[in-house]
Length: 112
Image: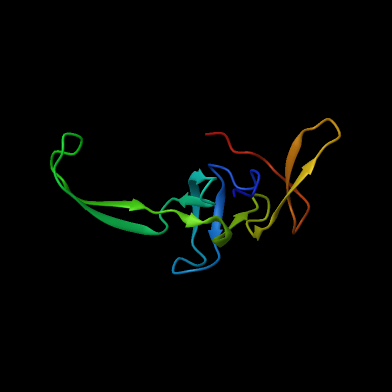
């Protein structure tokens, strides 16, 4: 069951808080909602050996970012540069806004 409700979106700067890449920061490339995972640029790099094909005539070793569980990342607040949990505040008119729990500042959505 997918949870999170848009707390982390594509383009956000996040910090890894658990695992081999702990304290590494990167930009979210993709959010896999059903799997509760995110793909972060430069984090959890894997290598795949591929055969030559029409799409990749040379084949060889391809390096790519593998997904990380969403519970292992924390959003970096743009105003302070520190990681913070995120809360969703719903305005009376129905508008949803992301709020940093640590400071109470709103977090703008990044356009990409």
